[in-house]
Every structure is written in structure tokens, then in C-alpha cells.
Image (cartoon, rainbow, N blue to C red; front, side):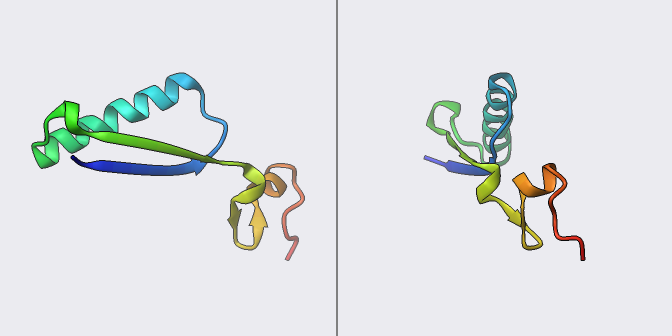
Length: 69
């Protein structure tokens, strides 16, 4: 039973998440030959304030409060 975990910043629409689950499932079926009904996909959504890149949270980057260096 393949299990794929996707971690991403929050904010995607339900439609985008449905499409992601479908396409990730398709990729596992196509590449591993797994039965579709055995594929599990888990989406983890992280708040923007908990996601940092280059020492700055995504929330601060989006608000223009990023590191001015």
C-alpha cells in the first residue's frame, strides 16, 4: 500500500487539493503499477507563519516584512 505525504503551505482551494490527490495517485499507479484503491495520499497544510525560507517566514515574506539584507 503506497503512502504519499505532501507538506505544503496552507491556502490552496479544495479543488486544487482534490486535483493534487488525483494526480499524485495517478503518478503512483502509473510508475509503480499499484492498484488505485491501495494508494493513500495525505496532505499536511502548514500555516504561513510556520514555514520559513531563508530565515524569514512565508507570512512575513507575503506581507513585505522579509529580511532587508
